[in-house]
Image (tube, rainbow, N blue to C red):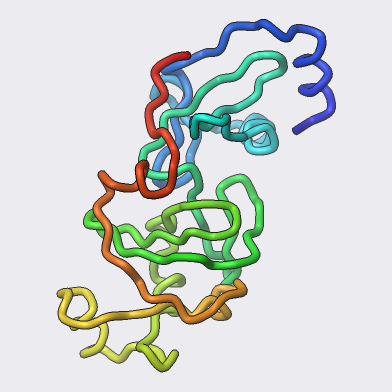
Length: 191
């Protein structure tokens, strides 16, 4: 967190938290009361001061005040840059892949050393370059069809996303089960 935020927390320790104002979309966009935050400096400030409490509720520490975030899907949204590197919507770079899943809503999920996050749908094509068969070879068209219709398995080769880890089978998960599986609260409602 920013030094001035830490100082404000120490100076005013009992400022009430805010709920229901801040949202994180499935594309990693911050919204205040439904309005997109367009200012890059404000988005960066939120990103630097984004954290999770002991109950799995994600928040932005705004000086001495916690502003809890409602999550459209997951606490992280992963993006893939032009070089195939994965990073979060807050510009953090994960190191290791732990789990991968195809959600029932079509999103691809990665669980890394930073935590669970969906791939921004605008970067799905890049991420799919890392989807392989059980030997680590890219899926051909038939293999891709068999995987998407559920008649065959597919895997993520972490090295193709500049991540460490072993070839990882892509599970199938319901979006409704993400909170329980990965231990976060998508819609914190209060203390």
